[in-house]
Image (cartoon, rainbow, N blue to C red; front, side):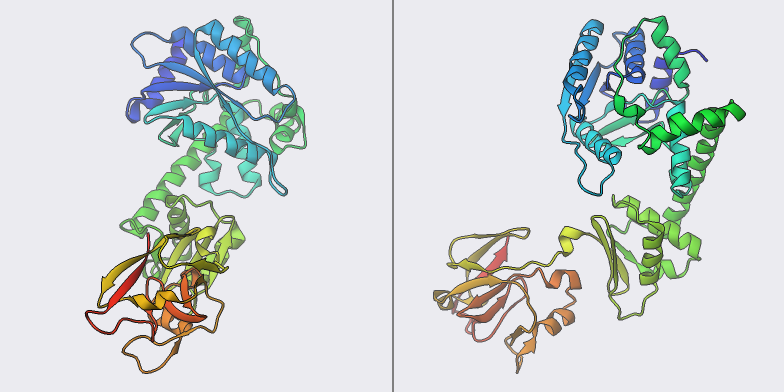
Length: 439
């Protein structure tokens, strides 16, 4: 099937038909062959009755030619009469990170931030890319969702990501470029076989095509079948999970399910919360903590995510939410005090409750738990360990090390947000006091 502008435009409009009509279309233009063909062909078919067609180029700054490529995109778009947006990102990989994955993440994050509500971003992924993606996912041990490879459309930021070239081979794009005498840039990193995709593209795929000439179509057909299987798994998980649970998953629902459906629900729950997915070993750990003893509070973490089991439910948290806080902050008791990661601490005048106003004349410090703190709550006969008070109050373990504590003259006076300790508490209903609030 030869690539023609009218046919491509019809495919694009068909892709976006199932969602709110895009208010604008933006072609992700790298300056390479694929995206140049996509923008040129759409420009040839575009007409006044359609939303604006624009282009966007992301400068990763990783290659010496990066500025020259950006200038090439400017000239190319000027020749087509298309508005171009230029984005710069820091795509340098840190130690232990994949350069490919880091650059991809930085690029899509910048593009997602650019998109306005209901705008569509168009990428030039084609059938060769789809076949390579399926094989890469297979070699990584992916399940049906991963083997579905790249969907033709999905949400991206406030808008939509569309891939209108997935039904075309790269050879068809090359033929179109020659026919229209297009000029494009070549990224030398695309020839570096150290990158997984490049090795597959230049070393493995040519050998496979010698024996299976229709390899691309066959693999794309498999990707579609996996996409259907993944969609069915999604529907089953929704039925098994029940109403939306947010970042807390009651374990009662999981216990009634066989292992495969239990894993399916866990994956679905994590995806719905926007978490990255754990490895197979980490998923096995997650299943183990789901089956832990009633009084156990185990946890499993990966990347920036942690799942805790607490009170017969799984709780999904970012690592930042579970990181213990430490340090000592001096406070005058009057000026609002910023507690990094928690908010602003303020003392509000009240009567008959809270912390006695006259106690604020002492030496005030905000600290965090170190262990061994004790507090006697008004109405209770003796001091109790703060650890036990927090347990009895149902404060989750990951929050217990992040609660600010007010010390006055080196004595624990208040567990902010929870209790005031004797002898710092207000006694009479007319006695002046303060309430300490995090806002």
